[in-house]
Length: 116
Image (cartoon, rainbow, N blue to C red; front, side, top):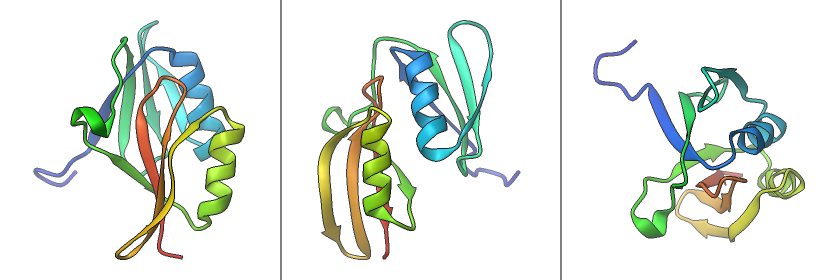
């Protein structure tokens, strides 16, 4: 591990089962349960976990935005929707690429971007 590098992120999740199923289906992340109120994920490029809580991460309330890279943005958008995610901001262009924002089943907001 690199000194002072970000190496773990945690999210609140209302429904751990739905959140786990969503991220595994769309992104292929692996999960390890640590009791009934916590699941850790790996295979995302950054290790992390979800803990049982009624809170959620949303940029409108000042949360940091986790952004995932995609080789095919339109396909990623379709996969998010098929797995039960909600598009909160449709594809838009910004300097360096395009992206969209989505809510996973527990309500956490993330984004997917592409330089293609």
